[in-house]
Length: 190
Image (tube, rainbow, N blue to C red; front, side, top):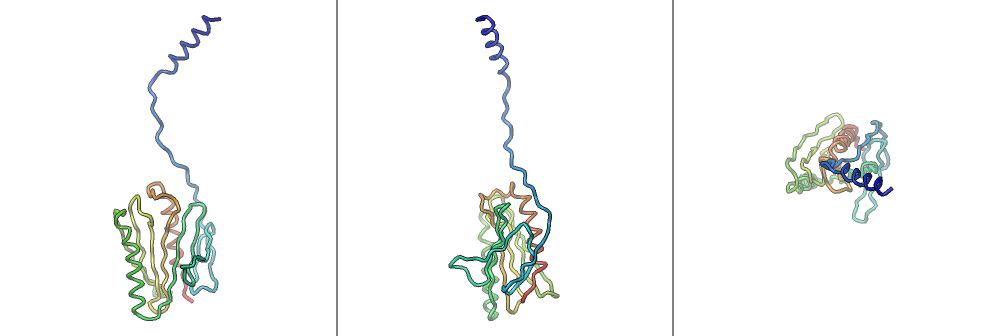
């Protein structure tokens, strides 16, 4: 019995030798839902379509202003923060443009590039800029503002409630970018 146990022990020790190489670190698979949109039309001075896997929640913080809201995507731990301003005079509009540009430019230390896309839809009177912020550690990868140039100004910014690693979040960012573009393309002023 002792000989058999000794032989098995020796075989076991030799069987475990060899080159061990660790497996590369993996990431969870992200299942993206089918695109389907719901109309947001309430007492707010704007209406738009947003994805059915998102939820529009009015901003209840004490610092929020009327008609602010969040478009939340719990499945992705992401939120598009929407802030609305009523335009009372031309000076207000200039200040809102500058504030939106400034918020996007605050990402320069972590960004590798910031591209601006001009948005113009004369039929719906929707004009603005979409900022795409590239960089692995940029906190917000998409920001935009739209206005009718007379009465309304709406600003939006996409944030995730996870540590920024935009290489891993890339598929989700691209997926939600389509939804943000759809929101802008279906926006109606009231």
